[in-house]
Image (tube, rainbow, N blue to C red; front, side):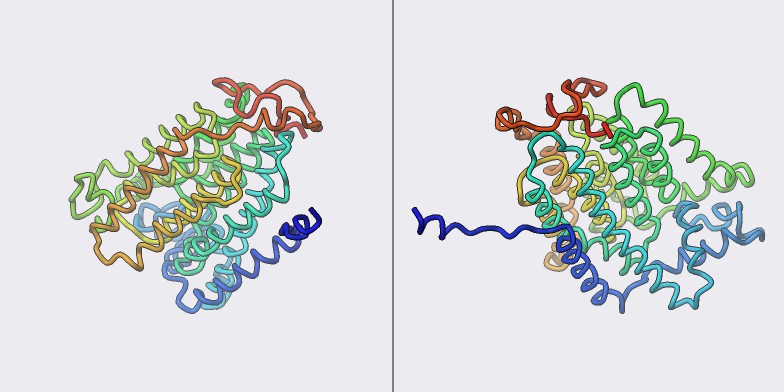
Length: 406
């Protein structure tokens, strides 16, 4: 017996500081590798950041009417403009460092959201911390892709505010959740597909969250359309339909963006997200919204995968309890790895379509392990003894504590 005990491999305790240091070191390594060839799209943000603070006819509230190619939200340009006082190269590196740091904050937010979500279920926090670490090792390369290689501040801010919204959702703070979703939309309109997160709030708090969200979205966007109606041109801007796009497998062989593609992206993301919440799987909303984008977008830039990795991160740490975050690593290998090992455009499009189909079916239909019986004998600190009722019934395991009680 003594030998058997000695043969057991003890997993060392992972402190919060060690956890963060490991993720930071991994992020710094990727930053140093990618930065010399980074900033591919930063000129769009720099130009928009200059124009939005400019009162000339080409800038200010005329920005989208005069420059429909600038597809970022006003919040993104306002933030980008803060780096313009620096020399161009210095400002770009500072912006890339800022965006990279936000990725680490996203991981912290995901971990804290999961801890609050599983409060009262007897979840092992060391196990949860390791899960976040393993998922973070997959998440960081794609975050560096969007924040450094492409320097897409709009995507970075939209994903950051979405992660912040998830954090407030688990605390049932309706106003803050609505505000964060509005800021995500004001950073990049494609965040519209993540709006079903608001439905995961108790039904009585929908109105408050919706009003905050709608009010701040209107405050950010309406002035541009009121001042110049030609601002709608930004919504009609098209890009080439890449041969590797999954759209080709759906029969869309137009040389440029089909007129129905963007509305279909939003509709599909909203519908799938609403279904996920209805099935008590709110943690799948971001992944489903990102899936809708990559399957119906005519372009195949690798930075798109960052939104999928945020979705898999939230699902892996909040939507299931296995130690290994399977979907985060599958997304990295299948969507990003295939870019380097699969030379055929059409095949890469099929791979994207297959990933979307399989991951969507899994998070919506696969059984989720229930630990109520396993934890029935445990004494946990419950703030409230009754289950939380979501809009269509219990949103989390009955008998667990309210994640938003404090």
